[in-house]
Image (tube, rainbow, N blue to C red; front, side, top):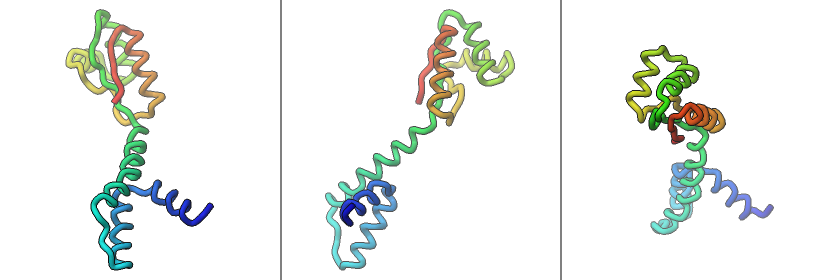
Amino acid sequence: MSKVEDLIKMLEEMTVLELSEVVKACEDKFGVKASAPAVAVAAVPGAAAEEEEEKTSFTVTLTGAGANKIAVIKEIRAITELGLKEAKDLVDSAPKPIKENIPKEEAEEIKKKIESAGGTAELK
């Protein structure tokens, strides 16, 4: 790889804050001032990288109990290990988060369980 390609790869992996520090260091070192469009272009790759990082954890939210509320309460109890009253209160107060900050695979499985019991859920 060339030096330019190496530099581009390094910039792609940086956060917006790190990119801002690079721009400031270049301004100080070379005695120049970066224009606003150059900073905005440099910030885009870092912002995209941060969004991708945030997508590693999901929250499953119960949006409705559907017609078979008892089956949904049983499923909530199995997923969360809540008591009967707490699970019923969670179902009655939908939309409510069921589990937060969990991997995508686990979140999708919980959503399928809720939907197969007759409820509705969404991933955030």
